[in-house]
Length: 288
Length: 288
Image (cartoon, rainbow over all chains, first blue to last red):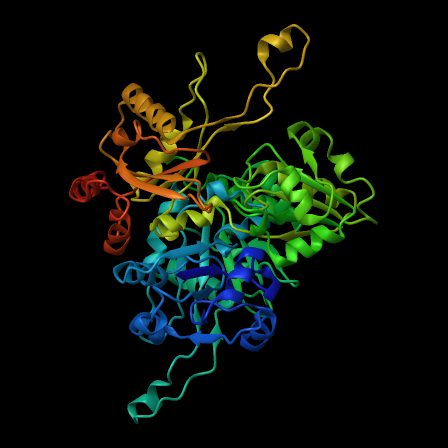
């Protein structure tokens, strides 16, 4: 049996009781370690909590070496641990399809992920549109396909969750060209970088998907003891220091109910200014 | 301190380890018992698992009697348990705002909810639009505001999660008029009822938000041992027996990737017919 087990967002103890019991009985335990990280735990703290060896599964192992992960899982119980919930990333769907082909039974043990826990900022999950990923811009690669999606969401009044890039275990390109594999230190996109990139693309596209005055919420370390929200305009968040990773951003849509606004104001430095930004933004696309 | 604790979807053991430790130390433990139910647990099984009395919190207590729940929570630890994750329903946001006003600290312990666990059907969470609620039609009340939302989602190619009505502890109207409070037996909307209501509204509105041939996924008992998915057209699901509650429905959008389709075909009775329905549906709104 292959068990896909969500670990939740932060602590070792964010695993469910059923998830923990399952990990303890599995023969091999893999931790998917490249699409996200647990903020308050690492390999060794998980190992001591589970009483089991934990094998880190990098992108290469999951995407090309899935047969290693699935080896003899027709007979043995294998756990594949995923930060957040188990179906956040396409690669995990792929692993399930591969398991099915090998006649391996699969069971998912779900957990919280940013996709539902973001409701803690006070915005109703019902009025979120499609989720977008913001990747690190490089000198030559500044992809802006997210812009159309944000536009689509905001045209119909919906909030947008922006998931920020993380780079773990990325090989250094210069070293790679010399035939050596040397990994870069991990990088986690900050709220400020994300908002700067958004402003750059609006400046370039000028189609008015949003403006520097569009209200947003910075989400820092969601589900961890130091979780923080900051409600401010996009321009303000482009200069905001959100502290340690992981970060996300929510861009508001026009559909902001009074209760949502009440809740958000708690996170605004200047409540009147934020309220005014929301009022102004509600006129945006109001005719669509 | 007020702890809002998500219980996940089905078993007692779907609570997180941190959630369980917190419940065990709380002075009072409330279970929100009107927006959803735990499929494989009840008050008494939770009480024996927690070693704590569990107080059922109905709509009246949560919405009008929040001061009872929050009594002395400045000093005492109080747990408020919610099926799924904690911020699924507006009423819980309201409780947090009330706690803040009373200077009570609040901590959320998150868990899986249908909003993220629905990824188990194989459709990518990134391409879901706004979520809609489908309520039981009555003779005189057949609300169709969901229709515009589904239209908005499908115009931009997004999937729609439809959450189905549940009625627990609803007073019988006839008895109420006689001055007696008698509760109706609980009712949970089925996949078939939902799809019949959708067909009725399309028939009435004729605006083409969807057709009887639109591909959908029936989601039964998500996260429970008897979890089942069925991929079929809306018309087929209007006659599908999805078994015991709880049910949800996903209506597909145009943006179906090959990997998503591969995954879904596993749940189709007639794979070729379902594939063809998806192909046809992808032409729908393709010009927008």
